[in-house]
Image (cartoon, rainbow over all chains, first blue to last red; front, side, top):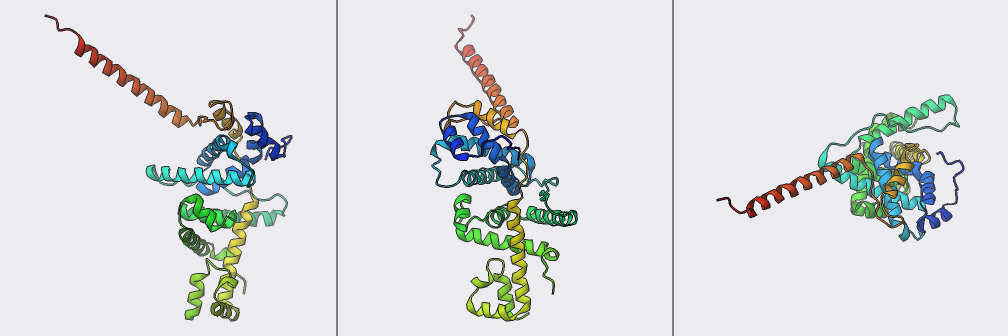
Length: 190
Length: 119
């Protein structure tokens, strides 16, 4: 994240941005852009679309900033907005075309592990990414929000405008499908 | 496969071992195959959770694009800035041209209709 020299005190930045300080808001964008983009990318599996979603999420955040009271962390709030934008996008997209698959999207790996471990980790993450992409988008969204980001079923249901039961069913199906696809990856040695 | 194993397998994607009903829990404690199945799902969940530590770098132009979109709106937070998607801008321009063409056509029709007949 290119955040050198960027103020890390989001509280002050939020207060300034709420007063209309665009520079402060730009710093907030700089601080949170990577995590917002990563979430968008995991939800839609398309870099261009993820960039559009990230942009729109920040613009909506700017619009809604006066209503942000700090009950949740700014990053959590941004995640919710991003999910809402991505979900709205999904509905629009469903009407127009098939879901794109971005083959160039690969999960980056940590630089602090050995080259062998890094290669193994990269290969595993690549298969996991590929398996996630093969899930139908509504299923993938629930799996990503629950298992990657730790949302509760209630939060998922509320933000996707589905029932808690539907969220649970999608998670169940998604995990089963991932388990079947990643059988060799997750096999437990006897 | 025993019927109880089938039940465990059908519930495994949504349940932790401890969350299974007592009868199933006792079965899992005694059945290596079901333990392995529960462990597979545990491993899968851990691998998915580990993705939350991995961050993908956003495109360099994102900060500038957001600033531009906000600048095209009003000055203060809470305003309604325009989002600068090139596709949408082109569509909006097309709509303006179409509306202008329609207005000209209507104007010509009205003018012709109201023009006194030449005798």
